[in-house]
Image 1 (cartoon, rainbow, N blue to C red):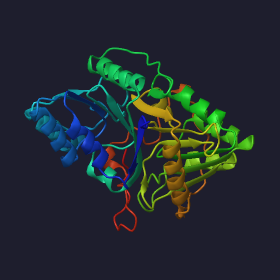
Image 2 (cartoon, rainbow, N blue to C red; image 1 turned 45 degrees about the horizontal axis):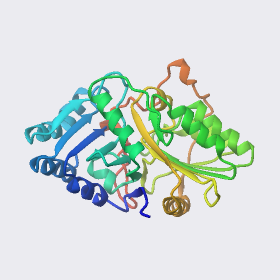
Image 3 (cartoon, one colour; image 1 turned 90 degrees about the vertical axis):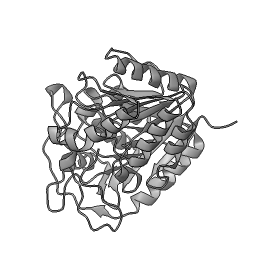
Image 4 (cartoon, rainbow, N blue to C red; image 1 turned 60 degrees about the vertical axis):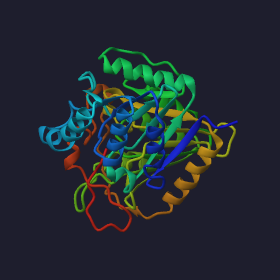
Length: 350
C-alpha cells in the first residue's frame, strides 16, 4: 500500500516535489505562506491559474517592515494578482503568520518548514511532508478557510500541530513521551516549557541532541546562546552549526523503537512562535521517513559545530508576554543563510 506521507529534504530535494504537486493540480491550490519570492514557484502558481485552477494565497503582512513589504512582498503579490491569483494578507490576529502549507485539489497538502524563496532550496537545512491523509488534508483546508475569512477555528486532528492553539502542548507531549533518544533541529529557541521538557528528558536518561542555527553575522552575539546554554547546563547535547543555515524545525523521538515518532513544521521553540503566531506542523510514524531523517541527522551531527559563548541569562516565561529575541526582527536584517563553503556572511532566514 502506498505511503500517505512523503518527505521533502532541503537542500537535497530542491523544488521538484513542490513543483510536481503544483503542476498536477486540476481544481484548486490554497497556500498560506510567510515569504514567497521564488520565480519558479510563482510561475507554477500562475500556470495553474491559467489552466483554470483556483489559486489563493494567504500571505504574512502585518509583521513585516514597510521596506520589506515594498521590496520583497508587494512585487510577488502584484505579479500573482495580475495573473488572476486571489491574494490576501493574513489576519492581524496573529503576531506573525509563519505557517507554510499548501492544500492541493482538496486531496493532498504540503506542510513545510521552508519558505518559498530561492535560498531555501539551496542554502538551508529544511524539511517538508506531503500528506494525503484525508483528515489531515481536510483540517489544513479548514484552517485556511477560517484564516481566509478572518474567523476563529479550533483544530482537533491529533497528528497536526497548530499555533497558537496546541503547539506547546503537543510538542511538550512529544518530548515528554521520549524514552530513549530525541534528536531535534530548530532555528530559534527560548521557550521555557519545551526546553524545560528537553532538560527533564535528559535527566530521566533520554539521550537528547539539539542542532540550532547561528543567529548572528560573524563577530556578533549569537541570539541562540541563551537557549543553547540552558540546554547544555541541563544535560542536553546542544550545539549550533553553520555548514548549512539551520532553518529546520524537526524532532525525531525514539528512532528504531516501536514508539518512534517524528515532527516537522514551521514552529520554533520560542514563546512567540508557540503562543502568538499562526504555525502548522505534523506528527508522523512512517518508517521510511523516520529512517531518512535519522540518516540525515546523523550526518549533520558529524559536521563541525560553532563555538557558543555561554549566556546564563534566565529564560523568560511565556506568560510574561515576552517575544523571542529575534522573532520580530525584519527578515531583511537577519543573517543570510550560508551554504557549505560559501564565502558570504550569515544572514538569518525564517
